[in-house]
Each structure stands twice: as structure tokens, then as C-alpha cells.
Length: 166
Image (cartoon, rainbow, N blue to C red):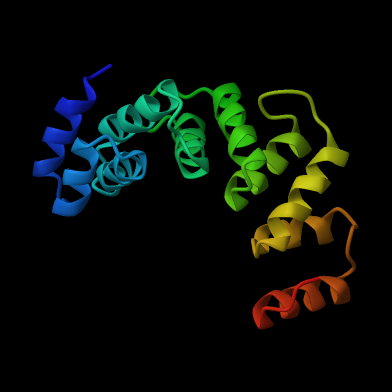
């Protein structure tokens, strides 16, 4: 694993370099370090991106977005060896922290038994949590699983679009 200070210095040559983010990261700001990882990913430098996010995880400074980024990286093998079990692990942590896309991705894993045991009941619970945060794919999944009929699904979309809570 690269030293985080070296990683932050390498960020100066990143296409998406942001000086304020760089200076904050030098001071150890975890949000800035996560964002630097995202900037590296945007320029397809996935190895540096993952190193930033793993640094935060290993130092107990990761937030839900960091866990989502790690989950996606492990799922697709971007910048790190593909590992579905680890992807699901990070999705689960992010989902517990309320990250909508982690909730959705964790629900998919639970529904299909990716990276662990299939659990449709728990999948529905996480699809619902993601749907309440406006993830349209989660609403579609709930309709597909028979939790909503088409009219209820459309009403749910409408409420989300209008900003009305359920």
C-alpha cells in the first residue's frame, strides 16, 4: 500500500486536481481524501483511488461514500482484484450508514445470493430503504418482487418526484 502522503502528492498531477481539496487532504481531512480518490477514479486511475479509500477504511476514517466506492471497486475489480464477497461487505457497511446506493447494491446481493446467502426478505427491506431515498431501480425491484403493483409503483415515483414523503 502506498503512503497516503505520497498519494496526495501524486494528486497534484491528476486531471481533476483541486487545490483546496489537496490542502485539506494534507491536513488529514477524510472527506478530502475520499474526494481525491474519486478524482483519481474519474481519470480511470483506479489503483490510486482504491488506495485512498482503503487508507480511510484501515484508519477508521471512512464514511458511507467511501464504503460505496470500495464496494463498487471490489465488485468490478477496478484498481483491485475483483472480490464479490468484499464488495458485499462494503455495501453492507455503507447501507447500515444510510447510503442509498449501498442499500440498493446490498439488496441486489441479498436477492440473488451474491457474496453470501440469498435472503429475499432482507433484500426487500433494503430495496425499500433505497426507494425511500429516491433510487428508482429499487422501486422497480419492489414492483418486480410483487411488493407494489404497477399503480403503486407509479404513485411512489410521483411522490418521490414531487418531494412528498411516504
